[in-house]
Amino acid sequence: MDSVPTAPERQHIGVTTVLAALVLLAFVAFAIWVHHGAARVEEIAEPERALAAVVGRTLDLDEGVDRAPAWERAVYTALLGGRADDLAQAIRWYQELAAFSLDPGVDLHLAILEGEAGRLDRIRRRVDEWDRRDGDFPAMAGWIAAAYLGTRPDVYRAPELDAELSAALPPGWFRDRLALGLAVRAGDDGLAGAARAALAERGGRLLWRLRAFAVAQALVVVLGAVAVVGLARRRGDRARPGSAVFPPPWSGREGVVVLVRGGALGAALMTAFFLAPTGGGALRLASALASNLAFLPVLLMARRRLLRPAGLGLRVGFGLVPQRRDLGTLAAVLLAVLALGQAGQWGLDAVARALDLSSHWTEWFEPDLAWGSRAVAAVTLVDVVVVTPIFEELLFRGLLFGTLRRGLGAPGAAVASAAIFAVAHGYGVLGFTSVFWSALLWAWAYEKTGSLWPCIASHAADNLAASLSVLLVLRG
Image (tube, rainbow, N blue to C red; front, side, top):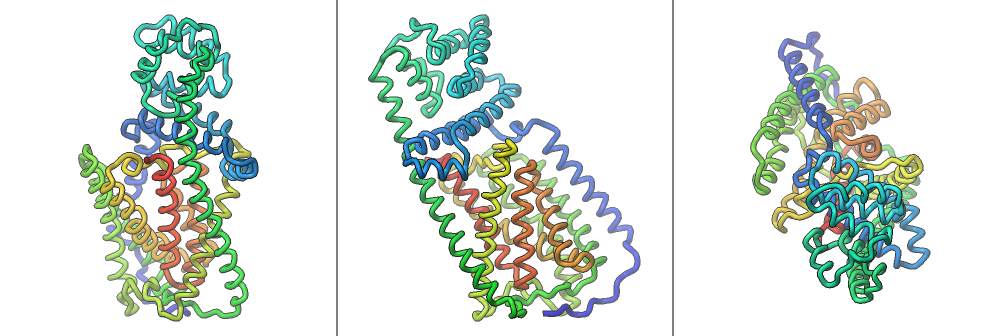
C-alpha cells in the first residue's frame, strides 16, 4: 500500500522541542550513570543468593547432561557449551561478586568452583590465606584442602561434618559437590552415594526440561523454514496484509518532534517510577507494571499529531486490524521471523564461545520469576510477555522505524531503529547483538506485512522463551 500525502511540514523545531530534547538527553545520561556507575551485581537484590541459584542450577543441568547419551551431549555442547565453559564463566562471576561482597559463603562457593575446575594452585593459596584468618575461614580451609588437595584427612568427622556443611551451605550443587569430594577422600560410601543421588536427581529433572525446550525450539525452526519457502514462492505478490503505509503518513520532522516531546514526558514518568520506593515484592511489581505508562504520552501524541491528520487511528495506522484472509500470511511471517531469530541466536552463541564472550547473568536474571510467589511470577509473565511487547513495538517499530523510514529508506531505518532499541536495553556486547538481530527481523516483518502483529507476537515469543529459561532452570 502506498503512502498517503503528508501535511505541510513546519519549518522550525520550537523551544518546547529543544527543551524536551534536553530532558531526554538528561534521562539517557542518568540511565547510563545508573547502569554503568556501579557494579552490575549492585543492581540485584540479594546478589549472593541470586548468583548461587544461577550457577548452582546451571551446573546441576551439566550433571544431567553428563549422564545423557553421547550424541545428545554433543548436541548440547555444540549449542550451549560444556561443563568446562560453565565452570570458567561461574568463576569469573564469583570473582566479581567476591570483590563486592563480604559474605564468607561467596569465598567458599568460589573455592568449590576452582576445585571442580582443577585450579589447584589457586586452592593452595586460598587455603594458606584462610588458615591465617578468623571466623569461619579455618574450617572452610580444612574442607577445601581435604576435598580437593587430600592434605587433611583428619578434617573428616562423620556425622558431624554433614551437619557442619548443612549449616554453611544451603541444599544444592555446591554442598553436594563438596560433600562428594570429602566423602570420596575419606572412603565414606554412604555420604558419597547420597551426594551422587542428589546431583543425579536434580540434573535428571533439569535435563528433561531442557529436552522439552530444545524440541520446542527445533519445531519452531522447522515450521519457520517451511514458512520461509512458502513466502519465497509468493514473492511476486506485492500486496501487504496490513494497513500500515510506507513511507508513513507523517513527515520526518513531525515524527521526530513527537518522539522527542513524548519521549521526554515518558522519561519523566520513568524517573518517577525509578525513584519511588520498591522495597516489597508486590510494590516492586506494581512499579514495573506502572512503568509501561511511560509509553502513553508518545503514543497519545502520535495519535493526535501524526495519525489523526491522515484520518487514521492507532489500530489502522499500525496495521492492527487484520482481515481473516490475511491471517495465514501473518502467521507464516511470524514463523519465519521466529526461525530466523533462533538460527541467528545459535550462530551468535557459537561466535561468542569462539571469542570467549558471554552475557552477564544480571542481564537476564529476574528475581520475581526465580523465587517469587506463583501469583507474582504470573503477573510478571503477563507484563513481560503481553504488555511490554505491545508498547515497545508501537514505539520502536510503529513510530521510530516509521519516522526514520521517511528519510533513510527501509534498510537504513531498520538498522538505525534496531540499534536504538538494542542500546535502550542496556546490555553488554552479546546482549546488544542479540537484541539488534531480533529488532532487525521485526522491522523487516513490519515493512513486508504492514502490520505490527507479527512483530508483537515474535517479541512476545522471545520474551516468553527467555522467561521460561529462568522458570525451568531456577524454579522448582
